[in-house]
Amino acid sequence: MVLKLYGVTGWGGTDRVLVILREKGVPYELHEVDTKNKEHKSAAFLEKQPFGLTPYLDDDGFILYESRAISYYIAAKYSDQGTQGLIPTDLKANALFQQALSNELCNFEAFTYPLILEGLYKRFQGLEVDQKAIDKAISALDEKLDVYDKILSKQKYIAGDELTLADLFHLTSGALLPSCGYHGLKTKPNVARWWNEISSRPSWQATKGPNAL
Image (cartoon, rainbow, N blue to C red; front, side, top):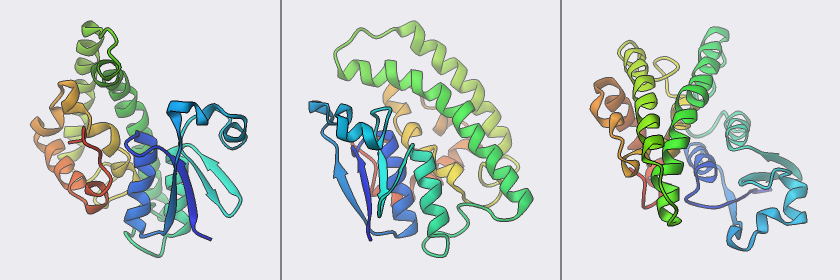
């Protein structure tokens, strides 16, 4: 059966999964969730995703939610097709991969989220923007990316010298940062080299929305 993805294109979680589906060349059906009419809060949806968020995956009755978990599942299930090596199998390489996954979540996403919330989503919704919160988020993220720059001065990608899911997971949030007034992905030399490469991949070019870098 073809994988069924229930989500919203242009939203980070859904786009993250779409990138991996395209990297692996996996056929899929995308079912757009009508969030404007609160479809994601309906009883039927909550049976699949109890937190009422998108996306979730239906693989012939196997239901999985959380975009990173879905992406990992797809990369593991279809390990022999499409882009290779997204999940390292060597023990030490996999440990470094797991470390990189934690870095993406704890040292990148945790700092990009408040910046995107204030600098992009609130503006789109016509809500009052907290400039102090934006300045604080930019300062904190910039410090984290200074560390990224040091890491990437010694290796090609976040987990080593091979592309992994950890790199691709940065795309959805990272691409929105210029719209929030932050340009560190382009000004830090080693980060810029890495970012230019991963953001140029056909999978991302086919996925990114109008506000993405």
